[in-house]
Image 1 (cartoon, helix red, strand yellow):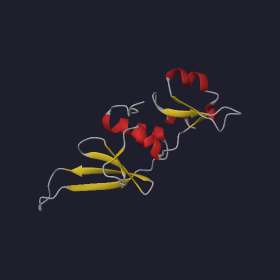
Image 2 (tube, helix red, strand yellow):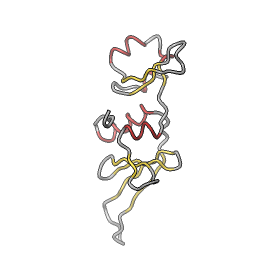
Image 3 (cartoon, helix red, strand yellow):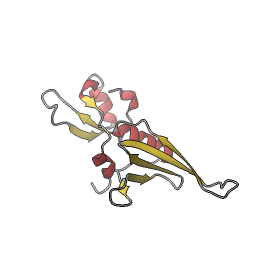
Image 4 (cartoon, helix red, strand yellow):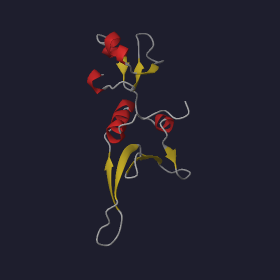
Length: 131
């Protein structure tokens, strides 16, 4: 894993020799940079899964619907066909007075990438809910 992608507070897996089937998930900290500098091959990204999205507060608005997370009044994320997508609402009405939205697919595979994007958009950390 490239340490340049990590911010303090990102969740990662530590996979030590002999413990590949039981990774230790932890929150990356300043001391971790110093300790794992020569051991970055032990640090692995956490794949983006429905379970993790639920931990970060994504929810289903309706039963059997897509997972959804409101980021700001104008931006939200949702899971559609196992792909994370984003949507930006334009509150400036067009000539026909309809609210416009721009939907886009996010190329995010790992938890730390979602955390970093969320921080870029809100200047706040994406926190685990109820844990």
